[in-house]
Length: 523
Image 1: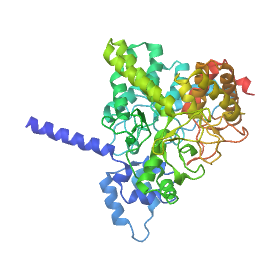
Image 2: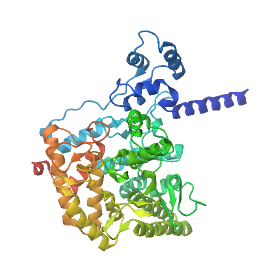
Image 3: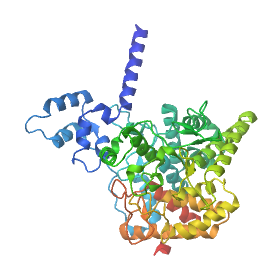
Image 4: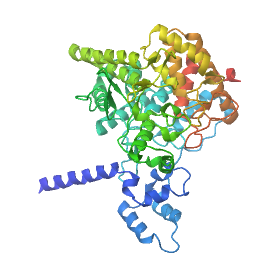
C-alpha cells in the first residue's frame, strides 16, 4: 500500500513539474494566439506573465464554449480568468539625495523574494532572493545579472550575489543550463554565459572554495554549450556548437524552438512576412538573436536595414567564444585547486585551442577588428561591433591587436556619451545611436588590461556624465542611452524605454568607485 502511495505521489509530482514547464501557448491554444494578436495589451509580454485564476483546462473549456457567442468580449474574458502581472513598484526618488542613495534604494525596489512554486504561472520558481532588471522585466535575466552583481559588490551586498549564483546553480541542476530568464517560455534558450564570471567575482571576496563549490555547475553549463560536439564533422553545426573547417570547435547562439517567441509573438509573426527564409529557419534566427542578448542588431543581418535577412545561426560570434574560453579556464582552475593535474591540463588545452581559433577566425587584418565569422560562407563578417572588445577583456588579443582596437574605438565608436554599439543607424536597439552599460564596462575593463588607461577613463567619464545628467533631469536610470545626441533618449527596440535598471545601476556604481567620480561632476 505504501509503495502504491509513493508511486502515486511521484506521478503527481511529475505531472506538476511538467505543468510548470508548459508555456502559455501550450496551455491555452487558440486563446493565446487571439490575445497576442489583439490590442488588449500593447506589450505581448503582459499576457504570458499573467497568472491563471483557474486550471487551464477549465479556462479553455469556458473559452471554447463562449467564443463566437453574441456579446463575447475577449478582454473581459481575460481579465475574468487571469491575474495581471505586477510591475516594478512605483519608486520616486529625491534627486537631491544623490545617485548613490538612489541606487542603494533601488536594490530593495528591484529585489524579489524566493518564489512560491506554482504550476499555473509561467514563472519558474527560484529558491533564493534575487534582483530583477526593472520595468517589464519582472524576472531574473542571465547576463544582466553579472553586471548587476558588479554594483552589488560595490554596495557590500555579497549575500545577495551568493543567493543569485545559487539560483543559477539551481537552474543548471534543474534544466542543464541557465535559461534566458526564469519563465517557462525561456526554457528553449540560454544567454551569454557569464556564470563563470559571477563565480570568479564571488571568489574574490570568499576565496577559492567558491570555485570548488560550483565546479559541478560550471561543467554542466559547459556540456550544454558543447552538446553534440563529439563526432561532429568539419563544416557542420548542431545546437550551439560548430566544427570549423580546420576541425577546431567554436560556438554559436541557438534556441531549440522554431516558433515565434511567445513574449513577442505578434512582432515575430509580422516580421516573418518580410523574410524569404523558411519560417522555421527565420524563427530559429530570431530566437538565436534573443539568446545573444543583442535583440536586435544589424550585426545579425545580411541587409543592415532588414530584419527579414537575419542570419544569427550562420554566425560564430566573437564575444560568445571569448566567454566560453573563460569558462574553460575557470573549470581548469577548479581542477588545479583540487590537485587534479590531468583534468587541469585537459581544460587548459581546450582553452588554448579555442584561443588559437579565436585569433584565426575572428581577427580581420583588412579592418584591424575582431568580427564575427560566417561558418556557412567561410567569410568574416563586415559589421564592426563592440563585441570586438571581448578578446581584450579576456586577454586573448595580442598587444598590437589591442592597440588597433583602441584606435578604432577612439576614431569610430567613441561619441559624446560613450561608445556606440555598432556604426549602423538601423533603428534596432543594439545599433547606433544607442549605448549599453555592459558593453561600456567590457570595453573599459578590456582597455585597462592592455594599458590603454587614458582612453578607458575617457569612455567611463563620458558614460558617467550621461547617466548622471539624465538622472538629474528625470530621476531615473535607464536600460540604454543615446550616446550620439545626449539630449535625446535612446530609441529602437520592440518595447518602450525601460527604467530601473539593474545593469545600468551596477556598472554606474562600479565605474564611479573605480574613477572616484561623484554626482557633482556630472553637472
